[in-house]
Length: 156
Image 1 (cartoon, rainbow, N blue to C red):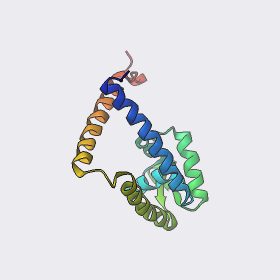
Image 2: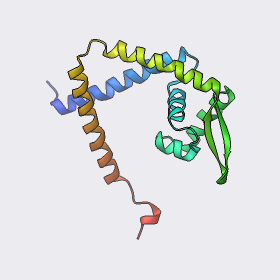
Image 3: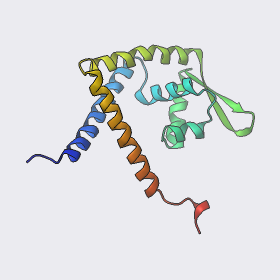
Image 4: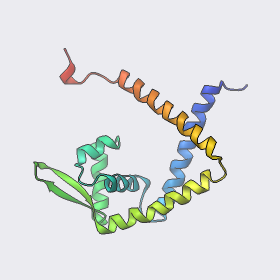
């Protein structure tokens, strides 16, 4: 029996996402890092000086999970934590020269991956997919915000 179209799309999105995450993880490991570490370094390159709390929020990670990632990156001399002059309890995060070199090298890997998985796909199909994914992301974000529990500060 054929699945309804919207259910089939959801299945395909989830399965494709899983396969792509696994593939990117394999490629990252070939360069001595992980997909998660790559993501942290890429974010820091775009926004150096973020504190750990802001980075955790932006990446939708639990602070303890991010702290473990940052510990590994720091032990590999890929990032550094600097005291936040405005908050003695917080640290600002920066790439080291080695971290910047690695994330710059990984840009070519991202380009290779995009070519490998999208090389045979027409530009019009890619544009349509981007529009569709944007709509799905917005609907999901709206639904998530609608379902989020009220914070303690908003409680009556």
